Image: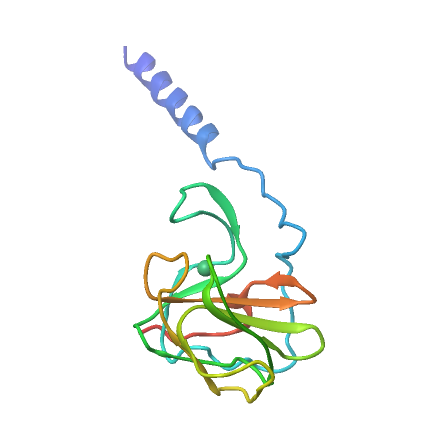
Amino acid sequence: MRRLFFFVVLALFFIGVGAYPVEYDLLPPPDNATFSPAVMTYPLYSPLKTGRLTDGFGYRLDPITGEEDFHYGTDYAASEGDPIYAVLKGTVIKVSEQESYGNYLVIDHYHGFTSLYAHCKKIYVEEGDVIEPGDKIAAVGDTGRTTGFHLHLELRINGVALNAKDLLTVAEE
Ligand SMILES: [Zn+2]
């Protein structure tokens, strides 16, 4: 009886070990995104004084549809109206409004590097403005497709999306 109990425990142990770790396939990034780390030769200015990272770069379950999709940006929750700062010197190439981004702007930092700031409440700059790092460019809002006040930040090199979390630090509150 005791021996049977021992074998049952042993069997459960092996079944348990076999069941973990969970096996899964790593999905490759889509064409216009990369998981490869990028090296910046210049430090990026934080786009927010404080913000809480709520949704990272990469595959995720969409908070609205519940479906798996690829998140090209990094989301930082902040308070309504909090100032948003330019991450690097550049020229504003787009100030617009769109269904999912809401009010957004794009800064061209030259050499193919761009930053996009979405869901803004207000935008303080115009297309063609030359921006210094740390310039106040917009205010945090919840315009477009969003579940709350946050900054959706996209960093791209030649159109290929990069993980903002690897490139800059935003202080937590
Ligand atoms: Zn986002």
